[in-house]
Image (cartoon, rainbow, N blue to C red; front, side, top):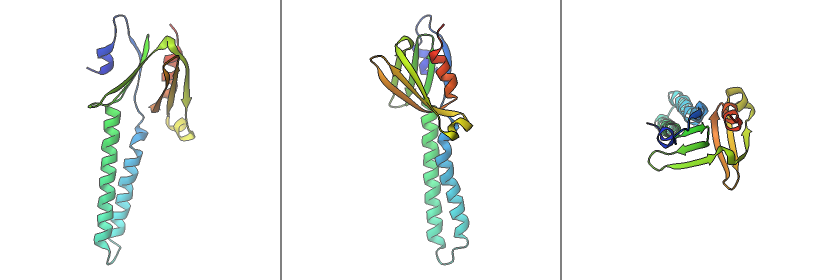
Amino acid sequence: MSYVDRVLQPGERVLARATLHWVIYLNGLFALLAAAVVAVAASRAQGFEDAVRFIALLLAAVGAVLLVRAWYHRWGMEIAVTNRRVIYKTGIVRRRTVEMNVEQIESVEVKQSILGRILGYGSIGLHGTGAGTEIIPRVADPLTLRNAVTARE
């Protein structure tokens, strides 16, 4: 059972859920691609094959670590908008949660780069009364999440 489902109050229902966009895997994929390019170059590097293979192996290890880290981050994050509040949870072992009452949210800011607009991701900024600002980066389909927060029943 997810964190959001466990903390729902009586009469509270989920209006929208969001996840991190797949773009968070790009750093790891680029490192693996660089490892492949260096590995191909190792076959042509005469006299330096071992050193170039070591660099390729190092790049592959960095890419694998980045991919696992991104997967862990995506797996441990929950974002939900209910009819009463916005719930944002990160972490599995060490948890951090932010819950803002929908009535206390003054504004919702959506930031999207050109690539974010093309691929459908962006950052959401929730500005609340007395609660400060909470930025949620690289959210998939941020406009749907914004609409769920700003829509009043």
